[in-house]
Image (cartoon, rainbow, N blue to C red):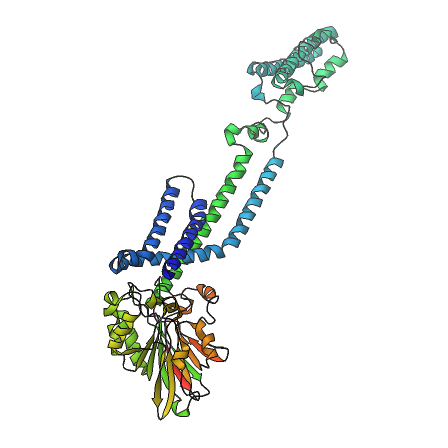
Length: 538
């Protein structure tokens, strides 16, 4: 039941994590369509693969688990570190999106302020071509008539003749002016026409103007020239860029569209950048972790002083190893390497502190046989994973006894050296309590000589509080894997008093080894595999 509950929690949490990954890696980085659908289904497939891989050993057997475990557990590791990187990037992502949103709003405001005020003027191309042409002809006629009248004056023509020609020119100019203004007025909305503006039909005829005199001639020669108004007035070439075209959505789109498109692009760029950083970081971390987990364990030399230790026992060397985790991802070479490294240390005794296997003797028995080659006296206590196997820990204890590795089931042995004696005790893991096979320290330590130091083998560090209450000098534990994949070590601290290394709890020293194998993902980050060479000093 404990295993089913644990796996259920993993699957439930895994489902939530996959949904979070979809929200950060798929939805904001793609547009609706085939690509998003493909990535969504790929993420669903990976979630199913992980679930089947975790449950595969119990449902399909060890043979199927060996096939499914590698891709399933590797994806579990990648998923974990994608989660870690994305959570770390949440704040930078939020800040970047906020900055992009503010810039988008600022750009939209600036665009609205830069739009020109609508002009009442009408572009030349909006005026009838024939009107413009007639204007040019009339201007030429006025100029030529003015020259002719001046020339005639030099030949002695009378002032009456000049006045008659000037009146004709004035009439022609007035007619042209009325035509132009009428064409312009027709292009404006009626609400925008000035009250004083009149059409050509409402203006008095040029015949009503003086037919001769200095004022009429002066108006033509020195007043505002209609030719100059057309040739030197406001240039219409700039009008398209300043007026009409800026209001034409059919040519350039609306300003809202121009401002929203960069904003969308910025959000998409930020989301894809975050996804890329998280993806590269996760893959690089997992790659490093796989290399570490599958590499040789680190030899950790540790010297521990015991107040009760007889000087004749000083210098006793104990090789401590735990969490070997023989299973679908570890082959025979894994066990052989550990045995070879331990024998190379030449310890006085070997302590295997639980979680040796993740399967039955029938499935994994051949992988454990190299343990029979350990040269020093070797002792074993159960871990929680021995209780997770289909047949329980008893068959493994019998198997190990046949290989020369003695199981300490809530019992102790005396280690003698040079006439001095050390008590070495071992207790079952606390996971066995559910089946009536839990730890019994009273039984293991009952009737011993209190003047001698005692070293206790207990799989989980949390048991140190019970050990301290019974006067244990030193407890050797494993179970935590040192966190195995940082920052999971922060979570381990919530359950165990020590994650790795040496500490003192309630007057009892406890050393926690990181283990020589791995469980689940073949990945170790920040917690390399370890074999501890411990030296006891008086």
